[in-house]
Length: 365
Figure 1 (cartoon, one colour):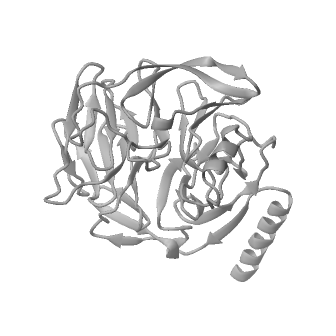
Figure 2: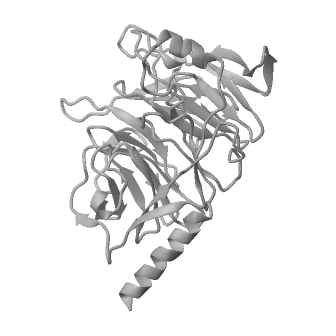
């Protein structure tokens, strides 16, 4: 009987995929995950689900769920597409969605399902903007030419319309295997507009009807010539935008500039954060991630220069202390209680106690 039900379920899924809907690869077990006593030191992402549980994503060790003192670990053997996690989201039904470097999982708290994307062309009608949509990128997945959109039924692998800088990029970088359109970061602003940070072509804004672009060399390339890409976009309490570094903030207009067939974001640059002294001879920092706390303070996480808090006038620096080891941060996050967290590549997760950051230990207050 059990075998018959499994065969019937597989047949239904095959029929569903044949009708153009997302197909699924599912690993079914009576129980997924292993109970552990310790967390990985690689915890680059923190997410709190609606039920209050914390989900921690690693850059190498998969996914962790922390509920009080209990730690449950999930890996590829449980159905994760890959153990390098890149984003964690939740839909309105309580399902978790975990983007990895090798696929996107849906997790209903019992079973991990790998969503198989429907590939769409640049002119496809699958480019839409709906409140319930989830957006993903799989940064590092070679060849991607746009983001992924999940509408509750299908996962669409989208492509940006051709941008005029594409030809210039390939002329300067002949033989490059990766796509300059590869999405490093997705961001939905307060108006519901989607912003995408690309690897080499700057920022793309999508309002549900049209695409417009913003490119400045200093946002993509660091002073020594290395490529940083657009890894963070954030709208602050005043409606101004911060992109990648603190030299400027951007006053973005709703309308676009149209010239010679190009559609560009209409913006003015303003002074960014003054008074920074990161210790490398500059007066600005490149940040990996940004958030705003309940008091309206802007928090920025840098890879190797600690955390910075800006209240609109003054800035304060927080250096995380992990012995002699330098803490390399990846993300910053505000939970449902207003607590600010930081995720790192090499030193676990950290919580702000109102005065300083302390390393997170499950079960501690």
